[in-house]
Image 1 (tube, helix red, strand yellow):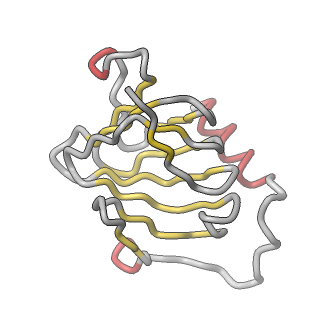
Image 2 (cartoon, one colour):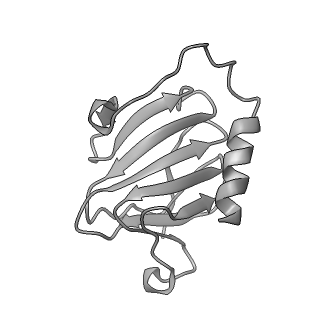
Length: 141
C-alpha cells in the first residue's frame, strides 16, 4: 500500500504533463481507445503521448504472453486491474518471482533487462505511468 500511495502522489505531483483541461475525462472499460500492436498487446492512451514523453495508459496483454528480454529507457510504474503477471530480471527465474494480480503494484526501473508475462487464463490489464517515452529494446539472453 505504501508503494501505491507513493505512486499516486508522484503521478499527481509530476510537472511532466501539461495542465489538464477544465473538463472531466472519463472512460467506461468498453469505451477505452484500445490500439493493438502486431504482437497482440493493446494500449489505451489516457494522458500524454507515449512515444514522445511521460504518459499514462492502460495496457492489455493476451493471456499466456511472455515478452522477450528487454529494457526500457524510462521508469515504469503499474497497477494491475485484471489477470495475473510476473516481471523478472534476467538473473532471476520466473517461478521465484511473486505473481501480482488485481490491485497489485509494480515498478520497473529504467535500463534493467527484464521479462514480463501474463500468466493467467484471462488477458492482463494494468494502468501504467512511465516517466519518459515508451520504448521496448530487446536484449540478448
